[in-house]
Image (cartoon, rainbow, N blue to C red):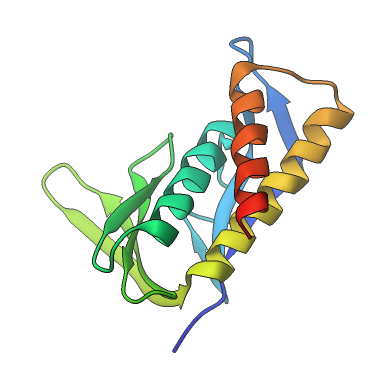
Length: 152
C-alpha cells in the first residue's frame, strides 16, 4: 500500500549559525511515524539541496537504482529504491557502529515524494527571502528548486 510522505520544515525554529549555515527542524512524517523524530533539528538548506538532487536523479534513473537521503547530524538516513517508473521503496535507517537498523519501511509515489520535497523547499525559501538571508548554499537550493519546478 502506497503511503504519503511529508517533509516537515518548521520555519519558526530557523536560525543561522556563525558559519552561515541555516538550521531548522526538518523531519519526515508518514502517518503517525516521524523520522528521525518529531522536532529534529539539522542543516535544512544543505539537506533539502541533497534531497532535491536525489529525487531529480531517481525520476530519470533506471528501476532498481538506490539513493540515500541523508541527514547531516546523527546516524540517520532514508534509503530510496526505485521499484517502478512511479514507485519508490523507502527504508528509514539508523547506522550503528557495526550494522544498520531499519526502523520503518514503506512504498510511495516518486511524484508525491518530489512534491513534498518541493513544498518544504518553497516554504523555507520564502522564509529565507523574508529574512534577507543569503549564502552560496541558499542560492544553490533556490537554483535546484527552480529547475525541479520547471521539470514538472
